[in-house]
Amino acid sequence: MAENALYKVAIIGCGRRAAQHSTGLKQDPRCKVVGLADLNEEAAKGLNQEFGFEANVYGDYKEMLAKERPDLVISCLWTGLHLPVFRDCAEAGVKAYLSEKPMAPTWGESVEMGRIAESTGCLLAFCHQRRFAQGNRLVREWIKEGRIGDIQRLDLYSPPHLLDCGTHTFDQAMSFMDETPARWVLGAVDTSEIKTNFGIPAEIMAVGTIVFQNGVRAGFQIGGPDKDLGSGVRVLGTKGFIEVNWDGLCQKAVAYDDPSWKPDPVKSPPGEQMSGVIRHIVDSLQNGTECELSHVHALRAAEIIYSLYESVRRHARIELPLTGVTDHPFKTMLEQGEFGTK
Ligand SMILES: NC(=O)c1ccc[n+]([C@@H]2O[C@H](COP(=O)([O-])OP(=O)(O)OC[C@H]3O[C@@H](n4cnc5c(N)ncnc54)[C@H](O)[C@@H]3O)[C@@H](O)[C@H]2O)c1
Image 1 (cartoon, rainbow, N blue to C red):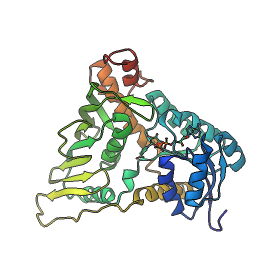
Image 2 (image 1 turned 135 degrees about the vertical axis):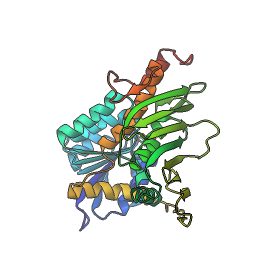
Image 3 (image 1 turned 180 degrees about the vertical axis):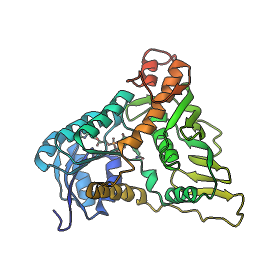
Image 4 (image 1 turned 45 degrees about the vertical axis):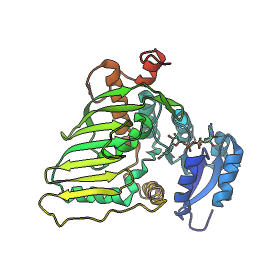
């Protein structure tokens, strides 16, 4: 291990996202990457070389877990592998596990991941990296300072796929409201085209309403035409409003009682969000401090998503907590021919 490294780190799945995580890892001297696992060993070797990790390369992640005994595993696998690989890592005694989003391909598997984390004590986190864009941190500060008064409404926009992209948007929204969970949801999906992202089928567009436990009402549009804010969040308060992109770039910030307030937009430098993710999870591992990327917060976004799909299935508003559902309602409906497409 490097002289001042505290933690042995392993990466499972060495494709595109692994390179992003590697940029963050290279900036944290507390981390020493000891193992890289990918079914395609060439991908692992390429990552090793590109980032100069000098790690051992494996085709089988279970062999890597047994030989390297990593403290922290970063998993950059497609969604269907999230639960089984996390289970293996938790059983192997891994202390912290950072998974790519979204949580899992069904609500039941998402809940099971949380259950395993709580029963084994393995810190489970998901890569909702928008939280570490400086602009998004500033928006949180402005809201806390009361710049726009009490939040009343949110407008949420994202590219298509409720599960794959919506998870970031809902997570970003809750980070602006002190992590307040949803109370009820009602949604609709456009299935005139079916998209598949990382093995999970989805609608081409979704819209709906979420009411949060603090009474804040959010309208959302995921995909489709005529979005008046490309991919981001508009926060409307009693005393003003803020429009912020997914990456924290502030489009507009208005305080009705202070026309002189004109904050400069902050553009995230490349790599800022991923170095923030790594720093934060290693801080939590080192100091036992709360991890804002934890499964507890990720479950809130996943619950909104699966409840929205369930509202499509039941043609009804869904009160949270979501009960009586373990599958992915959209996938089940698609397989049953509900949308006229298979
Ligand atoms: N946080 C974000 O903004 C963001 C952006 C894009 C994708 N993602 C998520 O990241 C995940 C991975 O996406 P990607 O683009 O890196 O995929 P990718 O296809 O580039 O990489 C996945 C890698 O996993 C390997 N793999 C597959 N099965 C394996 C196994 N059993 N053991 C070891 N390795 C295995 C593949 O060979 C491949 O190299 C997806 O779940 C996606 O939703 C997140």
